[in-house]
Structures are given as C-alpha cells and as structure tokens.
Image (cartoon, rainbow, N blue to C red; front, side, top):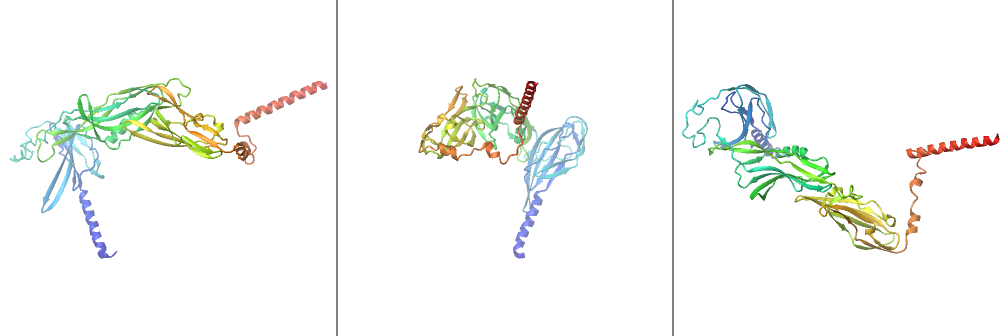
Length: 483
C-alpha cells in the first residue's frame, strides 16, 4: 500500500484514537468534608462524551447510610462544538456527629478502573438557612427547578402494589413425579411506583443455592430474558415477570421444603416538584419476601420394580408395525418412549425369551423439551435383531417397559405391536458352526498360567488342602493294614 493510500487510514485511526481517548474521560468527585446532620454527602461519577454503561457499587462510609442514587446528563454547544456529560450521584445520610474516614477506593466504570483518594468527613449539628446562604436568589430558579437548593430536590416514595412469589403447581406428588417451581415479580396494572431489576443474575444464583433440594433431579428451564406476561387473579390484572422456573423429580419419600427468600428491586423515589431540567427521581431499594412452600412426597404403591420404574405419562412409538424378513437377515427395531416425566431417568425395556432373538445392547437417543411448565420428550432404544428360524415373531413377547402413571395412580406396561414374519431356510446350524467358542478358549494362548481371580484362588487352595488330607488318610490306612 502506498503512502498516499495509507494516509487517510492513518488519519482515520488517529481520529478514532482521539475520540476514544476523549470518550474515556472519567472522574470521581467527592462532596465537602463537612456535613451537617440534616444534609447529605455525595460521591459523583462523571463520564464525558459517553453514556455510563456500567459501574461498581460505591463504597460504604462508617457513620453514614446510603440513601439512593440519582442520574443526570447535560449537553453543551459552544462555537458549534457539542459536548456531553453523564453523571451518577450516590447520596449518603449521616447517622451521628463525629469524624469518619472515607478510605481510598477503586471502582470500575465502563470497564475502566478509576481510583479516588478518600477523605476525613466531619459531621456537625444540623443547620438551616441553606437556601440563601452564600448566593443571591435567582428569579428563574423556580422555573428551572432550583428554587429550593437546601441540598437536592425533595424526593418522596410512591406506594406500590407489587410482590415477589415462589409458586409450585402441586402440593403432593409421588416419588419420581415432577412438580414445577417458579419465581416471579408481580406488579398490578394500577401500580404507580417505578421499579427496575437489580442484579437479577447475582440474586438468582444465591436463591437457587438456598432452595435447590439435594434429594431431587432438577430440569432447569434456563430463562435467559425476562418477558412480561399478563395474568389475572384476586380480581385484578397483573404483570408477571418470571425470573426462574424448574421441574423437580424427588428421589425418595418425605417432604421438600422451600424457605422464604429475599428479592431486591430498585424502587425509585420521585421528585415532589418535578423540574424540566435535572433528575426527577432518586434510586432506592426495596426488598420483597416470598412465602415458604412445602411439598409432600409419597411412596409408590407396592411393586417388585417400584425402585426402578419411571413415573409419568408415557406412550410407545415404534418404527414399524409389520415387517417381513429372511432368516439370518439383520433388522433395526426402535422402541421409543415419549411423554411427560423425567425423560433422563428412563431405562431400557426389559427383554424376555431372548434365546429366540439375537440382539445386542441398544443405541440410545434422547430429546428433552421444556415449556409451559412441563418436561416432555422422547427416549429411543434402537436394537439390531437377527432371527435364524422361519417363524412369526410377536415382539410383545420379547420386550416390555413398566412405569407408574401418577394420574391414574397405577402401574402400566408398554409392549410392542410390531410383528415379524420370518421366512427362508433354518440358519440355526449355520449360526452355531460359524460362531466361535469364545470365552476362555480365546484366552488360552494369550493368558499366563496364574490364577488372578481371588475366588478361584480360594477354591484352588481348598482343593489342594483336601487332596493333601486324603493322601495323609490313605497313607495312615496303608500303614495300619501293614502292621
């Protein structure tokens, strides 16, 4: 590339670096070091030419209580050049008189580390007359919202109509039966208080660790975005914001308890006298508490396989109903179990009369669907089968799958409908002659003569001892007869 060609790119790169450098002008400002009991101290983050996309929580100050956060932005045009700034202000209310130390701190703003030197704060008695002290009154203050500059605009809390709830769809289940758990924040349509989510991912991780039962399998619905949903109950219409949903399948009988959990939301206070310029709301926090829930888990009715069966509503799906095959010909048969329940725990069907069928361990394929508060899916077992005798084979005599239906409260069995018509000459002798002896005969040439199995060592030792004992007895009899 020639210098003439590269010059515009160089200029563009230089301009972008300059703009980026300008966009990264971030500073932290601290309020005055003397604060009255009826005033507030503040820490202000200001970013030039860029929005504040993210920032760490500002530090706690001994002797002070965080009051809330406000945001502001401004834009200036000087000689045709436009500039803008965006600010976040954290307010602190003094709790008592005295001297308190704000330590040095470092926070991340828009991914950039910014440090500030601390300072000593002196809290003094409450004082009045702030509006007129040290400045002349401006007749335009009331129009621009600055008529009362005692500290900052007066913010009031708006009464809310909202709650946070942990909900379950069943109060009683059988062992292995799924029940749905969800957590959501609700606001009525008449609610006037402004809310925003506060670190939902971090809060949710903590809550899940508190509520997740150790004696149950979890199928998490993995909510990645919070979508509003309209619901009706108690004669009112609500906006439901679901933050978590999962189905649990208990392993044993007893109780599963979900404790009360906390959920914190950002709730804004609003300015009593809104102004055209400046911030008209103040960030604050409110914690909501869910009600505890308990699920009773019942044992399954008596059955020889009650500790092995799946629990749910299932159907059988096969890949064919009738098929004609020749003796010795291999076919693939798919035994598919589909329905609602713990799909992951489904075991392969039981096999009967296996001496008439040559089968191998099946290949397995699973599909799990989660939606509308249910876990559904399909687990498929693919068998490779050969038959060496001409006959009609009903696969229901060879495969069966037993499960428990919690709705009907009884055990049920899925059996195949597939029918095989096998024709041709018998291949049974050919199959025997072509098969290898296998087993221990295959190992004669490659194994050493050491007995590695402990059970065989024990039997061998007993045999040698009996042989020696017999020899001694025989020797004794011969000596006795000789004498």
